[in-house]
Every structure is written in C-alpha cells, then in structure tokens.
Length: 124
Image (cartoon, rainbow, N blue to C red; front, side, top):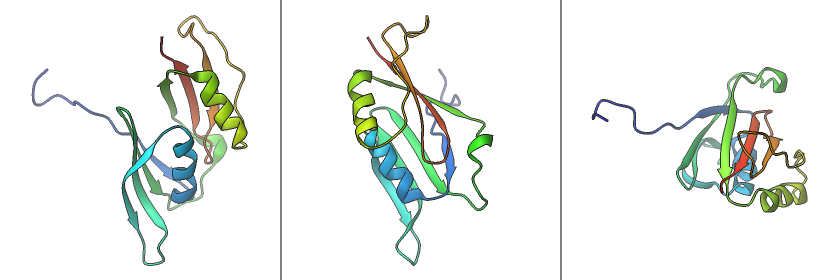
C-alpha cells in the first residue's frame, strides 16, 4: 500500500432528520464523534463511529424516497441474535436470522429510518 492509496472509507448518507438517524445508529453501537448544529440547535451533520466503522449523516436538502435508496450498508457484529433483540425491543423491523452460504454464522436485515438497507452479519 502506498501513501497515495485510499486507507479509509466513510459512507455519507443523506437523511431527513440527523438526530433521529443518530438515535437509530446508537442502537447498533455507533457513537457520535462530531456533530454540527444549526442556530436552532438541531444537528444537520454528524460523524458516528462503532469499532472501525464510520458513517457520516447529513441533512438532505430534498425529500428522502425510501424506495429509491441506491446503497446498502453491510455491517458485522459478534452477536447477531442479541443485536436483533435490541432492535426489536426498540420497535425496529428486523428480519429473522438467516444463514446464507457467505455468512454461515447468521445475518439479519433491517432498514434505518430513511430506508437505507442494513445487512448485518455475525463474525465468527
């Protein structure tokens, strides 16, 4: 790897309500690293992080279409069943645990408040 190679990626998701999205991603273990707020005190941008995963959330300047999200976030955790229970307890819709060939330990599917698809696989 050279100094000119990309060494980190942080997806940037446009969302309808940055505060609401931060609360959702807190359920997944993400903590705010940096938050920018407007004069009204509401966040319009945030950088959240969990382990080595980073996500940038920015207030969308146009309506969010749940059916037109063109990106999926693939995440990993060590206890898919425990995370699934936490999400269900918080009222989120989460799939049953599946065991596809590429993720024998188990995988769940959920959507964030803006319709971004999350696939979460269990690490061995």
